[in-house]
Amino acid sequence: MKPAKASGSTSASGIISGSRHVGHGDLAARVQRMAGGLAALGVGPGDCVAILMRNDIPYLIASYGAIALGAFAVPINWHFKTGEIGYVLRDSGAKVLVAHADLFRAVEDAIPRGLPVLAVDTPPEILAAYRIDPAAAKAPAGTEEFDAWLAAQQPYGGPPLPPTVSMIYTSGTTGHPKGVKRRAMTPEEQKMMDHLRKLVFGLRPACRAAITGPLYHSAPNAFGLRAGGTAERLFLMPRFEAEELLKLIERERIDTMFMVPTMFVRLLKLPEAVRRRYDVSSLRHVIHAAAPCPAEIKRAMIAWWGPVIYEFYGSTESGPVTFASSADALKKPGTVGRVSPGAEVKILDEAGHELSPGGIGEIYSRIPAYPDFTYHNYPEKRREIEHNGFITSGDIGYFDADGYLFLCDRKRDMVISGGVNIYPAEIEAVLHTLPAVADCAVFGVPDEEYGETLLAVIEPVNGATLNVDEVRAALTQKLANYKVPKTIELRANLPREDSGKIFKRRLRDPYWEGVRRKI
View 1 (cartoon, rainbow, N blue to C red):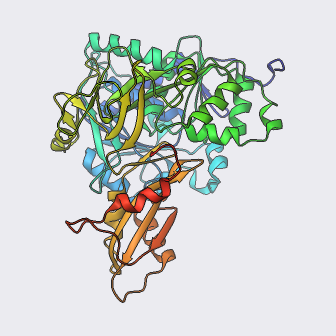
View 2 (cartoon, one colour):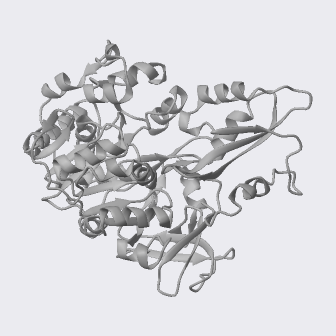
View 3 (cartoon, rainbow, N blue to C red):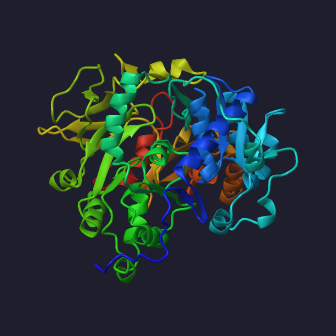
């Protein structure tokens, strides 16, 4: 490889986003003012501060400020439509909303009356990355401009409070997402989880880290909050672009990142000449998760970047319960690793009995040092996924004789597309509101880039005429674009079980024939 370029690199430590930079000392001072300002707005322990932003420095300041008060930062997926955002704001009972100006303008009707809004001017690199009209970049009337508001606040002067984590809203199985609310950590739990996260995320004080995915997702959020206080330099990408990431790695000597398999696919699709153009020898620890990574993609990335690729398996609810190195991936193609230090994983059959190695069943796990959680406002939903203190995300798998975990299938309807969890029930609920829809089924089908994409099969009402474009338009009005099925098919007489319920497996299975994986 050619020598690393020194020109154009950023020399200052801290958090860097485009042309903007905040040093660690200045960051700490801003966080204290953020906490003081939030407290003045009535935010206290257990309260929620909603954040509707793309990757940006104020995102982290707002999150740290909430955490300093023992409150919960509540990231909101900015792809959500007005109704979806309004639901999260109401369900969480958010005391304050921090939002990029252009996003606030787009969803203003969803904001509960009287909710204080701190509007962050949308920075130039985000305007460029998403082709946003600069006229929408400034804080609108009726909101507080974030930087001016922050500068006027007094630093928080209260006692230190036990640290919380962000309350992430997971996609809902019954039409609405649920907030995963976890109690604050004790000092002993904090110490044990710090050890596990250091192993999994690979972050250390001298590292140069990059955020490649959106901070509203669980794993990038956890990685980003830890990196912001640990890494020498943390670079926030406004949007993932394959060649732009390679440029960043070479220019800034990036050594630590969190990624998802879809990003690997896009990197590998770059022409060979482009891939060879950039020096990636600085990379030391690239952790990925959120979706299954095909073994051939993993091998190709290790061949290109070296044995720096790591993987963990887990969920927002469970935390990182398994961990795999590059050596593990090459030795055991397709594995998601062995049980992480301090974690416990079991494979259970339908009767709840633990299976021996080789036995295929539902994966249940827990990390005793990870503080317990509930689903905000829906504690009964937590009980549905628990068995004797262990919880499941509905994945089916097995341990081999050497203790490596493999995923086989998914018991629940959840689809993971490009690392994003999508529940078909939410989409089906909207389809059922259309007068000409008699019944429907939404499920995942194989996709080379995203792992899975959505397919909707609709049975029209007898004698009714359905137009696929009109169906897609109706879905787009109610749901984030990534939840709108890529393919919509109209069929009569869908296959049904004896109960009359659509036999979704019969619809889904033909698309997965000849594919070695089922998820």
